[in-house]
Image (cartoon, rainbow, N blue to C red; front, side, top):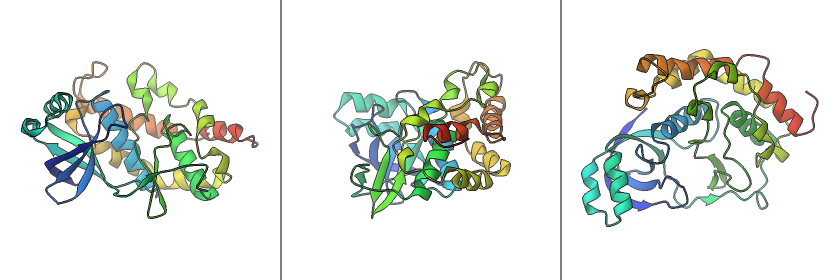
Length: 258
């Protein structure tokens, strides 16, 4: 993955509770910056990184993800004290997504998504336990008439409690019934076959290996950063083993035979 350095804080995005921002980087690109010092801290960035990169590996339309180095000294030129504190608390390595200028929020009442893409997104979100793709908050954008998946910080919520995490990797994902694209997901079985074929153990290991050590420190459930990283790998590999309770749950939610 690429690493860019913030050169200018452009504007906050106040739609999200973690107060992400649009920033300009040293490659002259604009990015949506997710701050390490915000909200749920590094866990949200880990979920954003791992889920987003798995989605990209599966061929889903996720904006490019980059590591973002932030100089806390940029806080001096920001008049908002809340944003000043956020910048100072996030000095160092953060995460960014390619900014899609002119994009608009997906409206399920106005835009039809074809069954193949809808099914792929539903299967993916069930796999990574993404609770945040509902009609209330779709976390989908339309850019140049194409659908893009954003904001995966609420996925992989198992990591907020490590007790019995491997056993929980086999849990169905009941909240898939609230997925905004479920009504259009008429090809779940074939979409899931493609998802599993794309997310091989080698791909999973490669994605998990990108998690920065900095974000894995200070976790009392593990003695070392390596053990902490391995826990993500083991959870995902177990979740990708047949049978697939999360797929069965999605099929049930659509009233289809399991």
